[in-house]
Length: 141
Image (tube, rainbow, N blue to C red; front, side, top):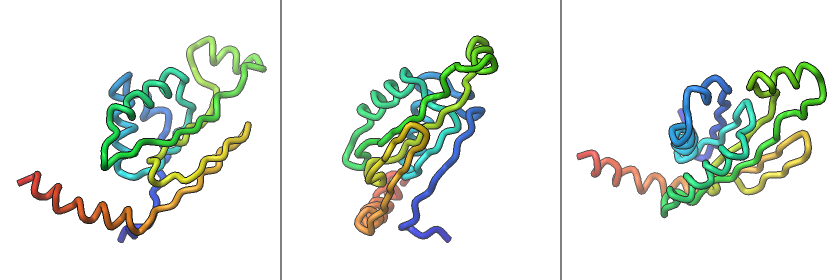
C-alpha cells in the first residue's frame, strides 16, 4: 500500500523519450510531474527541450500546479574519437536530467559530475490532495 507521504522517483530511459516529439514530449513529462513524481532521465535534455519544457510549464501553472525544478548534467564533451563519431551520427554520449514538482523539491545541488536533490512531502500537501479527490469524482459524474 502506498504511503501518502512517500516520494516516487521514476527513471526514464532514452528509448521512451525518443517515442515523443516536440510538444508531445513536454506533455508526457509534465503529466508525470503533475502526478507528483520526480523524474530521472537517462540522457540530458537539450537546451532547446529544456526551454520548451519551461514554456510548457508556465502555461500550466495553476493553484494545483506550482511548477517544476529541473537540473541537467550535460553530455560528455567530445574528447575521444568514439564520442566524436557518436555525435556526428546524431547520437548522444550521456548526461542526466532530474525534474520534479516545485512543491516537493526543496533544493537541488549541482556539481560538475553529480546532482543532489532534497525533496520533502508535507502532510498539508497530502491533505490538500485528499480534499481534491471528491472534486474529481464529482467532475466524472
